[in-house]
Length: 319
Image 1 (tube, rainbow, N blue to C red):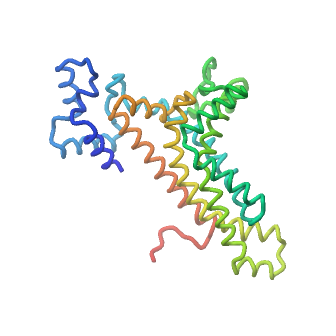
Image 2: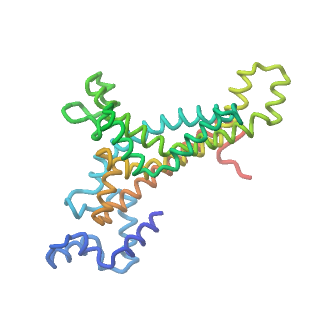
Image 3: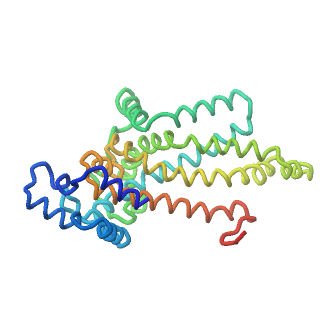
């Protein structure tokens, strides 16, 4: 992924130094930018410095602000993580619940209604869904604020960097209320626009499991129906769903680019959007790398959860 981003960023503009320096930059400024990023070096040399910066976390200096790109990303990372975690909580709870109900009520009107709901939200583009959410729930029906993360006007000590959690840990109830009030609409919007695959796979897994031989055998042994559904149907259906949830976590990062911009959420997504608009490739490359690490981490966590859901699965065994 990092290699693809490197070559795409070079193909999009033949003279990135002039672009990064700005339209009114002097020739000496353009030369300084080219020297700072080794843009006049052979491609292999540029590739070496590029990977060296990724490995060491040194993404260079933002050509637009003159600040360290790593520090700019770190100052926004907690805000994006707050939004993504809140969205994941909604996706897991709502996706598993709706998928389970839909699978267990297969062929009924409830099943059809649930399928129509998640397919409609899943097929809605991020920009359209986010704009509609702001218009409906922040303008026409002013239930929530249209932007921001609620930190304005509050002084608090940063512990985790996540405003809602820090407010809770410090028992700062007004700040917690403000943070949750600003978080509900963007988190719910991002979740609903991303969660469609989770109930779909959950429903499919329920249908595959509820009529399987081991479930029939459990019922024939006289086990309570609630225990059969909980231990033999739901638990087995969660194995495939866990993979999809991990994949969805990666999709959420791409969704934050649009949602954060529309909701004025000060995170990496909005930072990436501005980098795209300004063709700020050093920042864009760094943001893509960070998002990729998030996807890898999500899949790693999914691999750890597999053996918990199904003890027959062990890590590190050969075929």
